Image (cartoon, rainbow, N blue to C red; front, side):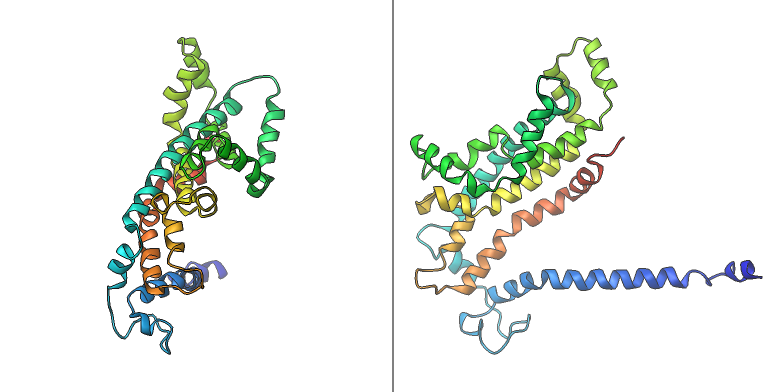
Length: 291
């Protein structure tokens, strides 16, 4: 009798539908809370400066104006487009070096055998717990001796020496999931370790490479502390330093212009997530899984 009742159409489908509705409602609420600061900043960029911190605090401005965007773009000594070009160049070049160097080191740890492999791998993982500020002064002294202060080299060159252990570990876990029979078959055909790396491993690792590239680009684009330490001339500023330039020494700021340029600074990151989200999700989901 119970089985017959449970088999009645629509009887057992109410609770799954209710649970799905509750889950979606909670997700929508969390998303609204997370994006509210961005929506408020967008609303602030469309308000006149006199109304920005007035009595109205809603998202919909009473008077819409786009003057903050051209004023912010041309409001500093250097055109804000120069900051975008600087950040784009640094982020792209650093990302290329980061992905290439990290994939080479990860390939050695995951697919090759050499003396002290476990020790060097543990040492590499130990650097994940090393704060950036611990190595800041030695690095600054080194780059100053090389004459690289107030240049982009300190922000780019280290990326070509596999300094980000997180990406190495991420790729090691992915490379270990690739069947070793492919390496053995390639060696039987006369392939060297280098040829196996760029003919077999890299083409099969596009999801994790894309994941590392996306995160590397975003972290480099959003980096504020590194450019603040090494760059002093405004012509070499990145977007983050350009945004800081809207705040003067007295602590006052052109807030609507700052909000407008902050909204524009989010556009490259948004586009990257929009066009590469499939590879990003696939790379994170399949890392460390047997295939």
